Image (cartoon, rainbow, N blue to C red; front, top):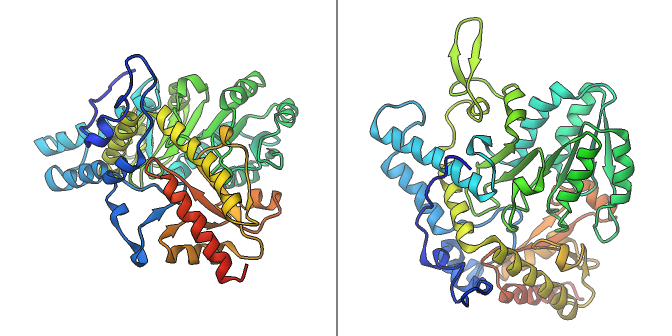
Length: 437
């Protein structure tokens, strides 16, 4: 890979974590979430006088101190625009900004840092593909294949596009457990869709989809593939080259990075052929009154002054996760999910749980308490310092498929402990007591 920057120094809890306590030649030591909690300043808070139990990482992750300090350092020490100033602090800002691009490329094993396009989030990255690639390649009667479990961000842009070009949307159904029906997918591919777009990991059910297999099937049918990795990159070892997709998108704020940071990765030949999404400064090479010559990729898609500090923070977040070891992150969250799927039914009578088994599920546990609206559940849990998500989680069609108006959702991260799951169980029993259950 090209243009790889050196890792940012991290707190000892993260920097020494991957091999701490590992026997020579043996598997790495398990993640220690209790030690990692010290890296996350927000976890020292005591809302309502209770320890903060943050179980909403699927919505947005908390940020380690290394990320916060790196962004603060930019504003304190070398706040200047990138790619433009011919003076020391501007050149330092450019080096940090482009260095972060290389860090993120290395984190997902992209072939080149020049295939990493900065966006504000995964949503913007999907819209970029829909507007730039989609409007050039999709026409009347062309099909796009999605799934029933998609986040609205990977549904609405394609709805808008196919309505505009008089195309068609088809959907891979799910089983009641939340597993994609690949037998139906195989039939849908006989329609020769131009694009298949699906989530790597469901933000609601946690289902981990078989990306490599689905990509190979789509390519055999002549389709390109976009994968929404917003819920995968923070929790799994993602190797873009091994997966084989054509487009892969993710958000920084779900992988311990700042809000306002996101990534579109795409094959270089696709990016070269795609027209710009936005126009203005920095995406140009030369401008005349009646014509413009555009910049090279990735800058062709990055108009205007970017969120420099967010990119720098995302680069540090990628370093932090690499230092932990993504295989260890996955093992930790798999253990937590298995623990939650065991403890919650035993400790909370009548609770309804949704989604697949722990071995094919990310760190997400959706649930309901019969007769109690999830919003009421979340409000009472907040009094105990427990933060969960309540609602449809931007997957209204999925909830309709499961015949559910809403669900509660607990989601985990590297700092989540079994004590947090126990606190959730205790809080849910209190909810039942308040409602007379």
